[in-house]
Length: 200
Image (tube, rainbow, N blue to C red):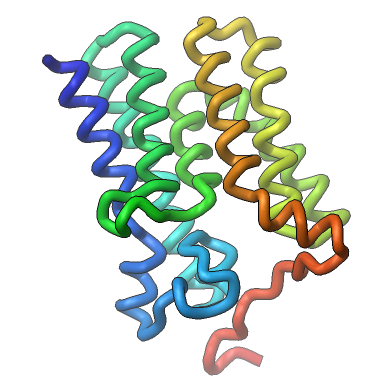
């Protein structure tokens, strides 16, 4: 029973559309501007860096909190992995948005910050290098996701977590399929947040 509550609760928490909520507070809807995505990058384009920062923090928390709760409950690794996957799936397939959502990258970061903080350091390093070279958020995000499974394997984490990493990486890549097509055509925009009012 506790396992079911954790997994369902994780999905509902992961489904909270942080970007949409932040946008409504700031007077815009990220679904109607830019790429139409509700994640950090598009919120930055529509509402600036502060709105993006709040969105990013909220998305990370909705990935990490369910996993931390599951860990505190003392459930097996398998249940923790399912809980993390449920939170991630909620972020990309939200019940509150008619099963639409973002790309899931920030929520995935939250999940893995709770499960394997050391592994996240390597994924973030991959993200940082690719972003510095390309200034393309989607490419950097996919690079971080691709780096995760081998890092989890190298750290010797339980096989349930390795399977989780593989599934989440596959879903992140799938969610970026349109970005991949634009990258192939040389049409993917560089990251450029909206300038905040009152700033030079």
